[in-house]
Image (tube, rainbow, N blue to C red):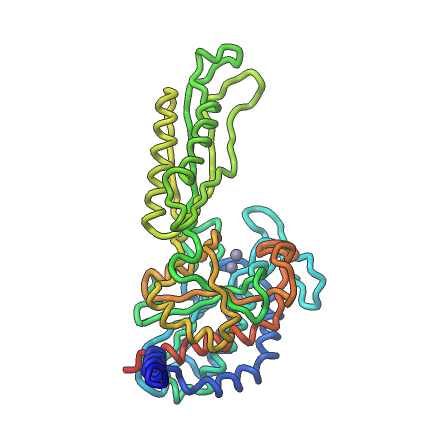
Amino acid sequence: MKRLILPFLLLSTTAFSQSNLKPAIDKKATSIESKVIEWRRDFHKYPELGNQEFRTAKVIAEHLRSLGMEVTENVAVTGVVGVLKGGKPGPMVALRADMDALPVSERNDLPFKSVNTATYNGQETGVMHACGHDSHMAILMGVAEVMASMKDQLKGSVKFIFQPAEEGVYDADIAGAELMVKEGVMKDVDAIFGLHIWAQIEAGKIGYRSGPFMAAVDNLNVTITGTQAHGASPWSSVDPIVTSAQAIMGLQTILSRNVNITENPAVVTVGAIHGGIRHNIIPEKVEMIGTIRTFGDEQQALVHRRITEIITNIAESAGAKADVNIGKLYPSTVNPPELTAKVLPSVESAAGKGNVIAMPPVTGAEDFSFFQREKPGFFFFLGGMKKGGDPLTTPSHHTPDFFIDESGFLLGVRTLSYLTVDYMEMNKK
Ligand SMILES: [Zn+2]
Ligand SMILES: [Zn+2]
């Protein structure tokens, strides 16, 4: 038996070479945990909308400079990028945190409850870190401090990417990660890691998926044009309302008859439909808008093609005309299986194997995907739910009662730090 076990052990240690910096990471991360929580509470109290993260950016830039980094501000409008040069040669590892808050009025009764309001798309609203990006920034500031404390021993460099406008902005076509990539932030990067705090996973746990993890999100805009008529004489109309009803039912067959549901799910939702003005007029036009969620480029192309074919041909069969317009927003967040297999032991060594959960695909979207399209990237969820909480009744992201248990932050700091130093160890130059 011994003879069999020995080669197996040798194999498993060569497959994953661990950095010896982990005890020092743990020590430093624990010593700054309360600072990370303070930073988060400060960001939470003063949240800012996408591309308006001016105060937020200043706090981040000052911190990175105090750690001796080269800092660039106003990247992709309000983004901040800091580079920490390691003492030894090696890869450039990028770590990303998003910075923006949402037009949501906070209902939580907290000493650091949001005090900010703003005008969003013409409406007065409260502003709240209702997606948890405040914790992402605080955790990454903590990682920066940990990495800076062992700078001379780092076998490579770290690029800290603080990204604005992850939630998108209504008045710009391009923002956030896509704009940062366009401005060249990924050019000298070898790999990128990022996390999202998750209100439906217990603090102390981590969720991930190899392959397509989060959906691509695209907007559907449809106009069906027929011929207007008196409601009492429908035979003289080409009725866009009946045609739209048929088109909506036709769209249901994409998921039931075109998508291979054993591979990945997809979603086609019509969210609004407008047409007509009174009981007895058949209108000329109906407008519909909706959202499309897909996983991976191939499935996305299939779903888009079927949407266009079904709506166009149903309209044509009725004698109406359809304009189908699909606006591409964020691609699918895909963790490359090869990179995922390589870095999973780092995640497990930080959280403990039993605390790392392989997740089903998530139909929400993330613009981290733009970074992953440039260089190999791994994205994971960090638990932010109170221990023993019920994911079904815990308020979800983007709601006024959204709440994060800060006891999970230390694991976030340790995991991003472990991923960085292990990746450097595995890709020494
Ligand atoms: Zn969000
Ligand atoms: Zn988010």
